[in-house]
Image 1 (cartoon, rainbow, N blue to C red):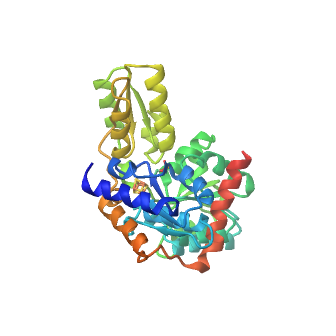
Image 2 (cartoon, rainbow, N blue to C red; image 1 turned 120 degrees about the horizontal axis):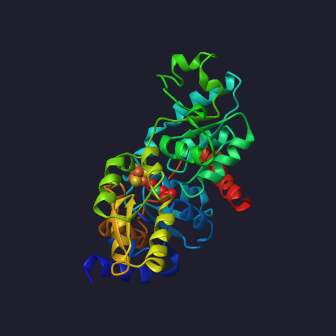
Image 3 (cartoon, rainbow, N blue to C red; image 1 turned 90 degrees about the horizontal axis):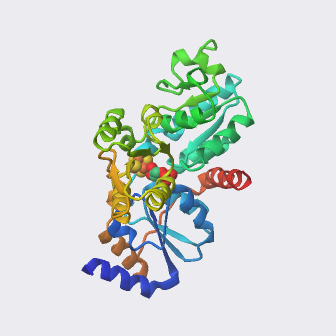
Length: 353
Ligand code: 13P
Ligand code: SF4
C-alpha cells in the first residue's frame, strides 16, 4: 500500500473508537477507502447523532462540517481535512440577502416558508430557522417541499433553482406556479416589490442559485449518449437543469444513482447506464459494476472543492488529533439554535412521512 495510505491505516487503528471518518460519495476513491461512513448528504446527517467518537473527521465541503457540528453531541469535535473546500452553490445565497427578502415578503403580508437545500451556510440555515423554515437534501426535497407548501402561503426555495423546479414539477407545479427571483441590491428587485407583481401570488419562489458542476450537463450530451449507446438508460442528479432531467429515465440523489446502478447490474446485465453527476462517483460505479453493466458519465463534472480533500490532508488531520494540536471547526454559537432547528425539523418531517 502507498505510504500515506499505510500511515492513515496505522493512525486509525491507534486512535480506534476515538475517531470516526465520514465521507461524501463525491470524494475520490483514495479518500473513500479510509471512511468509516460514506453516504449522501441525508445519510450523513442522519448518522451523526449516533456517533460516539470524540472526533468526527468530515471528508466533504464546509457546509457538511457545519451540519455535523450542529448534529454532534456536546464536547464532540468536528474536523475538516480541507477547511477551504467550500460548496460554490452554498455561497450563492448569503444570509443577509435571504433575510432581506423574507422580511420584505413578510412585511408585504406573505408568510412564505423558507426551504433551504442543505448545501447552504450555517448563517443561512439560522435565517431559515428564524422564519419557521426547514432544510432538505436532494433525497427528501419532495417530502419537505410538500410539507412546506401545506404550511402556509407559499415556499421560498433556496439556493438551487434547478432542484426547486424539478421538485416543484414532481408535485404538479407548472410555470405559472413558480417565480425565479430577480433580486436587487437589497432584497427583492424594485419591480418585485410592486404589490401587483405576480410573485405575491406565486406559490413557489426560487432563489437564483445552482450547482455550477451539474448546471454544465446538457440536453445535447443526452442526445449524444443515446445515439452512441442505443438502448442505454440515462439518470441524473436533480441539481441538473430541468430540461436535462425531463429527458432522463430517472433522477435522484447520489444514493439513488448508486442503487439504480446496482439494480441494473443485477437485473439487466450487459446494459449501459449514463449518469449525470460528479465524476468521482460515476467512475466508482463504472469500476464497481465492470463486467455486468457499463456505467459512463453524461459529461465532465468534477467538483474542485470536493477534490480538495486528499489522503495527505486527511493524514495531517489524524496526526493533529493524535498529538492534541488539531483545530476543530468552530461555528458561531449564537446562530446554532435556529440553524439546528432546521436540521432537526427536516429529520422529523422525514421520519413522519
Ligand atoms: P446529495 O448528497 O444529496 O446527493 O447531494 C449532492 C451534492 O451536491 C453534495 O454536495
Ligand atoms: Fe456544491 Fe455542486 Fe460541489 Fe456539490 S457538486 S459540493 S453542490 S458545488
